[in-house]
Image (cartoon, rainbow, N blue to C red):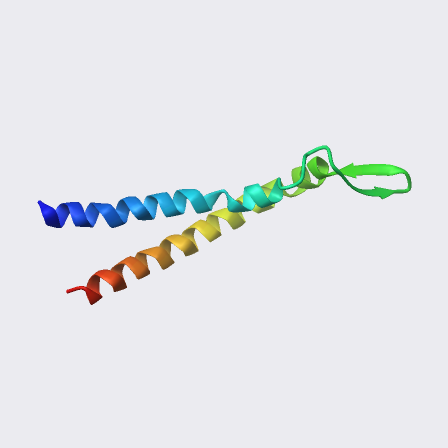
Length: 86
C-alpha cells in the first residue's frame, strides 16, 4: 500500500505544478487592465484589450506547447529522482 501512496504523491504534485503553470501566459497577457491605452496613433487609442484580442488565437497553441514541455520536464525530473532513491 505504501508503494501506491508514494507513487500517487508525485503524480498529484505534478498535476498541481502543471495546473498552476498552464495559465501563466494568459496572466502575462492580461497583466495590464483591458481598457489601458497602450498606444495612440494619429489620435486613435489602441487598448490592451484590442491587442490581446488580435493575438489570442496565437497564444493558446503556445500555452499548450509550454504545458507539454513542462509536463515532460517534470516527468523526467520525477523519474530521475525516483531512480536515484532505489
